[in-house]
Length: 211
Image 1 (spheres, helix red, strand yellow):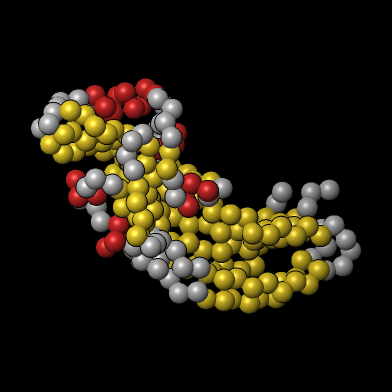
Image 2 (cartoon, rainbow, N blue to C red):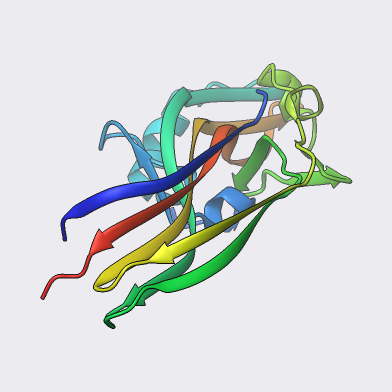
């Protein structure tokens, strides 16, 4: 299909082995894309990825966490969701009124695997057992919200065109593994991930329908 134009664009900037995965909203996004194919989200780690990462922290410790960072604030782009598709195969234009609403969102979200847990105090997440401090990361200080805003527009969908309304954005991802020791005994281990949302916008695009 050939692009014929972009009708409207609104940017909303926000400050700022197989194992069970405890994940946040960002894991429901339709697409998350790294610039390099060698980078992975925590949910895509293979058993070999875990084994190699654990080798970096296999030295025992009397008390506390040992961690290894695989990705450090690596930029990603994403498509959050497709909100609407209007396909006009007729001979007259379709007129449509549409309302956008921005919702209050956490700029920082967490995921964890293995026996590393996540706890929430209201909208604020943190890793359990002091892992946040070891990673020099504070969910509370980096969590921002945006007030709800309503945007109303009128859209005309011309004959033989398709209109797509989608939400895109950018963010940063840090992830790795950790082991918790108590009296030289490894009591918890698994993967951790921090996703930071940096921008989000609506995209409304009209394309020609191929005949």
